[in-house]
Amino acid sequence: MKLIRGLQNLKPHLGSVVTIGNFDGVHIGHQKIIKKLVEKAHAMNLPSVLISFSPTPQCFFGHAQAILSSFKQKHTLLASLGLDEHLLINFNTPFSQLTANAFIQQILLDKLNVKHCLIGDDFRFGANRTGNFSLLQTFDFEVEKTPAVLYNFDRVSSSKIRQSLKEGDFDLTSQLLGREFSISGKIIHGQKQGRTIGFPTINIPIKRKISPLLGVFAVNVELNNEIYNGVCNLGKHPTIGGETILLEVFLFDFNRQVYGKNAKVIFKYKIRNEQKFDSFSALKQQIKSDVKDAKLLFKY
Image: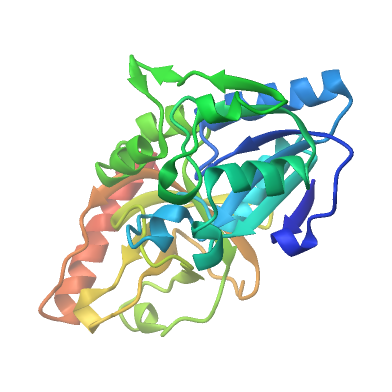
């Protein structure tokens, strides 16, 4: 899949089949839209193009929310679905002021020469969100509305997944995503405070201002093509006065140097919320309890 970063890098197309949205998490609803997009593009012998935005419109307008997938993870997931192109538009002040009609004419028609457009049934676009399905229908290309995907009679959405993560319901999260929730990244050097209390950890930076979940969890970690069990703390570490969100994992029976390696942390069970302790001794006792709980969950 080709990544096109910014409208300045978008070259005129001879034709295309297009969908538009944030696609955060690439959940089962998104997957249905993309599958139809790819099928239609193949039938019309045209490239399939997915348009997304960075930052998201919600974040740009001051309504920041937790992101379910990093850009790298989202791009990888989109590529796995057979898309031809991913157009990533920089959502800045000039773009935010672009009218819906101008968006259609300048981007969809003049640049992408769109022949068929698929959108979700709730999609809005353009300045003041005036663009919708009805407006798209007034232009000279096919427009198809994709209905919401339901799970247990509820609409599948990124917001619903954020709520299920907040509640620690990883079974529901997996059903809505079509896969287990995970965070991936490169292992870095931490403050090495865990070693001082007998629980050395691997540390993965969280490149998100808001995390979709916080607390202590039983996790699987994919590392060097092997899977390990462990306990993860995802939060600000209030006991040591932390200010930024960190992901630290204590792996059971693990004693290897893995700095610089890529790891995938898969969240299985929530053990407890993050809390502040009066001393490192109290923290150590709690971690012992967390490890015991996690091993029981894993039947370790």
